[in-house]
Length: 88
Image 1 (cartoon, rainbow, N blue to C red):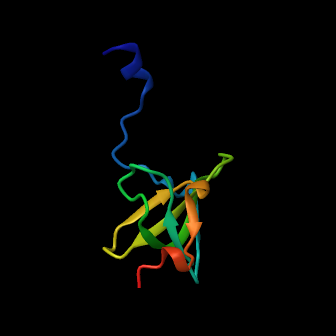
Image 2: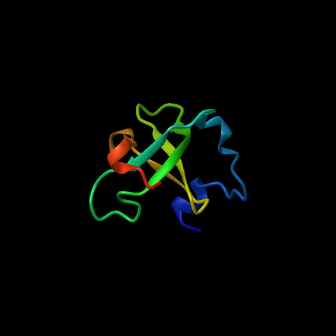
């Protein structure tokens, strides 16, 4: 057994709730993803929550898209949907 294996405990499951903070956004706003070349670039979705590590200084915004998938983004990459961005 290596020294690293001796130090690292064998864990089958980790309860991450004590490390992660989640805040639901009840009335999510429509946003579009800025940037170029990303998988979701220029797509629209609805904000559904904020997630962060409890001791970290930053956070990510969770966005749900029309296909039902949920992805996280930095706040600076999301913009409010205006008339020029509306899909309807």
